[in-house]
Picture 1 (tube, rainbow, N blue to C red):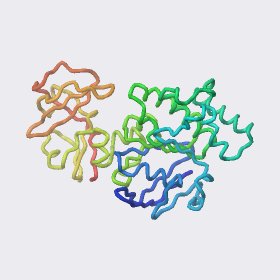
Picture 2: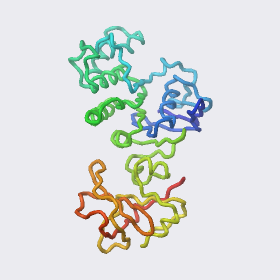
Picture 3: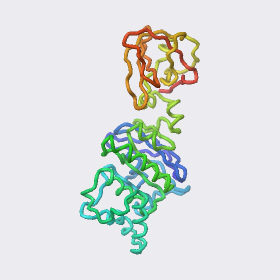
Length: 329
């Protein structure tokens, strides 16, 4: 449905380096990366709010270079929601429909339909300044969905919500996007958000995509050193350090190798010996330990349950070869 082809852009410190991405109809693609890597700039170029120095944006195989912003049929939701404080909930949701000069009855029907989808029926006359953060987020989403856009772009949509609210809203947002079937680009710097909502994840670094893959495939095999470290996978070893680890590990012609922390087990008969450096570090819904392996290698090990072992206790480890992957720089 959407094809981004070799987009290049440079101004100030923002650089896009021949960025390409294809997005299928109804797909949710998360663009994941640190601040300043070019995520939001790419979205603004696709929306038509900025122009690329080079490259092309195609929709259904046709260039949209000469199509004005308001005729592209895209929805755009900003991090700060950008609601109009002098309008109530219904007026905010209907705003984009009014700009399209639709008949009033059709405006009302689409606005009510969008409010129903986001679970805000009955909020029509509420003052937006009286709403909670999660409710404001839903109003902004309803306003983006009301015109039934071909493509919806969300730029850090949960960034202003506190952690306790974010996950509830994220689950509801995924439901809404899947029910609506709208093709979506979702920009975030939060790895957990991306893995929770994306059909595919495009990891961006310094204006280019490091890897684009399905969440599980990306987590198991992140392909590049940056992607592995950005996803919090610490066991990235140089070829020299990897060669020092005892045991029958697979061999690769690569400068860096990831030993995935999910693929390491505590095993009294394991070939790798070491001492616990960190103990029972909670990482979401699992905990981990860090084991020092001579001469000076640290390996993080993900555990399903806490261990009773303490700091400096001796342990032995076994590595599942399927969880050892080469990485490019």
